[in-house]
Length: 96
Image 1 (cartoon, rainbow, N blue to C red):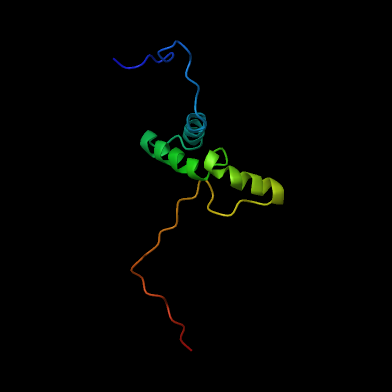
Image 2 (cartoon, one colour; image 1 turned 90 degrees about the vertical axis):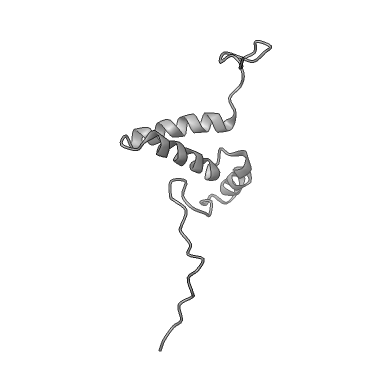
């Protein structure tokens, strides 16, 4: 049988990871802002938002760079979808 929801084998309550805390809050925020959004889409978006979140331990160096420079972190917005790139497109040439 699986683990109990209330705790682990030793009876201690399992602590939430930074990802779980962020994901729960982000999913709630997305559903409040977009009530018509399906749960599946909100779940996907919350996961994508974790990539650029300053709460993500992998992005901590970016967070310290922001506080040191007092400027925005370069890169896409947390809510912006990734740009689509056509790998088969040929570069445009200028005509005179």
